[in-house]
Image (cartoon, rainbow, N blue to C red):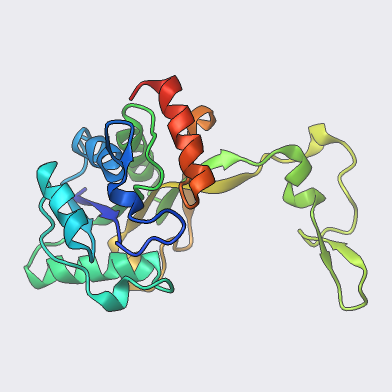
Length: 231
């Protein structure tokens, strides 16, 4: 299977200004994901999608010169990951280069287990699912079977639509949330307007050094984790 590794990195970060090229430890944030991608044996090609010249230069220094600068219309606060991926696919297909799937790797999740990308790709291929997402377990107290929504009368109803609350923690089905580290999706699904499709498989990330950097507090957590994992 021919898989494009796509690293989205726009320049207009507000929570942490210029975070993609800000030094985390001894190297720019984006370089952690670039290194992970380059160590993959199953990605057919790796590209950085950015609208920012400084990020493009940082990628080039790492040996991955972006083949394009992302148009401003796909680099706004309201721009979606789907739009970014669709733009990259359209660019390559205009060059008669085609991929079976896209592996989206967000640089704001800098820490991954060694070989994590290839393990995810292997599971994606063997599952024949439309997509794969990386996940972390939801603590039992936040399990959707114990979550509530307000109904039209201002009363609470179980968020899952069940009539009765599951009484014991041990009876709760295991649940997960997306952690943002990796998404893999078949190209046809993306072209049809979805990052997920009708069937989604998953891989669990390592919770010991998970961080999704959006704020300065997240950045401080990443700095703390870096001292523990020695990357």
